[in-house]
Length: 347
Picture 1 (cartoon, rainbow, N blue to C red):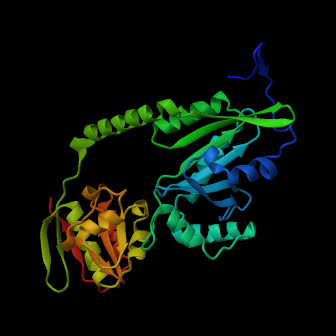
Picture 2 (picture 1 turned 180 degrees about the horizontal axis):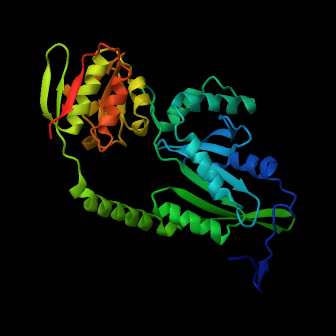
Picture 3 (picture 1 turned 180 degrees about the vertical axis):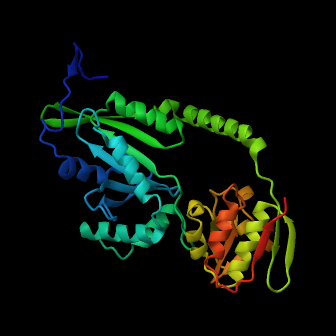
């Protein structure tokens, strides 16, 4: 679509331009302005870092690293080109690299970002907590990293790749920012092209329906193994389903002094939702009120099932699947050799 100047006698099409023709540089101009107005291409996002590259290959850097209010890291890649280059593949690599980023690392990155702009870095952690609505307690980011691609336009190769990746469960947004020169001013036509805003909700429903169908297909393949669990002091548990099996393992590991952070590190694929927490000794109901975005059906939230450690109340996820035994073994490996835990599959 084009932009037009409308007056009482005519409608005149405005010729589109390019960033290079307008003398606008990618990093020094476009990126600099967008970081201060990121809601234009990524609403409800705070910028944590610019040119982020805290990994071995320091030549590879994320243009802008953001965070949304749901706890998703957001990789934002910008291009001045008319086709988007290979920014989709580049962004995928960056998303994989930051997928294991911990809260403490994000705070450190935000401190550097504030200092680079001559702003006070001391309040970095509080700023992030306020943005997420979590004043105290453990914060673990979502396992899913969002991607926002912004360019003057996108090639068919890029759009086809993004559409397919989104159908596989990724969350990638393409935003076209086409520049125009008009009466000594620069106008930007900013349009979200993938997913189309009016179709986004529908696409989510289709994706969720597909996921439900996959669950139904896999229903007959579910593992209903039960476990026998024993501890060195004579306590024994028979016929435990997976969720109760690993719950008792975690409970014993905490009793033996293992920290919640160490348990989360032992099971990285659950790092984003292993625990929910609240400051102080609270009830399950209060804990859920402190974590309104979490589904109570997915956590051990009865008061008798909560863990109170170092002034913080925790509830553990009850969502466990094929990697339950792997998770248990990884947690046990972090315990002293005389932990006295033994288990076996019953059926």
